[in-house]
Image 1 (cartoon, one colour):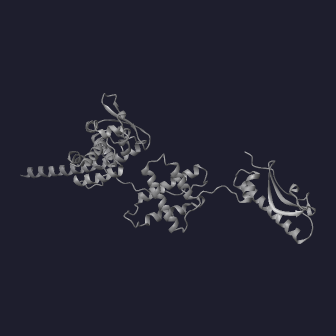
Image 2 (cartoon, rainbow, N blue to C red; image 1 turned 60 degrees about the vertical axis):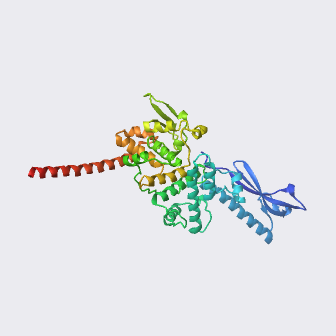
Length: 418
């Protein structure tokens, strides 16, 4: 790699533009034989110019001031050249000219980055995910306005101090509306989204230094909520007179016995059902989130729900396997179902996926590798979170067994004493 350049600066008169005996002064920058000329917006009588030395000649105050000005410009241009060398950037006559004229590389701001990310990812990310990025943007704007007293910052201004300040701001922020204050994991989710956008800026070469280099995320591991066998049966056996609750119940139970997430359930079409190697019906699809291939044998209860909607006109018209509802409406109706079934857990559609992993499969002895494959996890470490839940259940069951055995031994001793 070349580390040195031929570099020259020459001041001269552009005689072809002379008028009334005066000519404009130009500076010529030459780097590796390539040259660029810049007008200095100054004129001088040609008889007072020394072409060999590239400076004015004479002893008047005006001449001395002009030569001093030219030497300052020479030092300024040399400084730009040396600065580019130190930063190991490409040195050309044009790059030095741009620095002289104040035409530097475009410096991107945080808000530029967020708008660019949201525009570029509009057709890649799900609506709900983009909505989360908009929420992070609002927190960043609040932080900038209330704490830093500005509306935007350059990406080069982002540092460790900015990040820990932003983290503290979200933790301390008390919303004035109906929203809850952010918990630790929600705070980390906002930081995580900011990190992803910063990584995009680094890939685009808008930022050289990663401000997250010394920052460590601190998520609090939480236990995955899932339904027990009794709770699942209570929903399955509950009869509803309202049609929307009937449909939501069916969709939720279907997910409990297939492990499919909301978006994957509603993307199912009849083409996703096929005969597997065992001669039984299987679901063959791919996870929207990871594009991971998923193959799940259909359990009888899931198959019965598919059969139920096989002739439903609305389902057939949309070319789907099951009815379609928005995730927001679905979760709203699930709260009603939870109340009617006396379930105190915060029931959401995603709990069905957790229930499949725990109550339906792992608890019944299905190997963790098989469960991981059916859930479409890219790493078995993700599935091991559910295994820990099962270990807790095993611990509770064994505790109950110990108490029962102690009770039996006590009764035996009493009977023997008699």
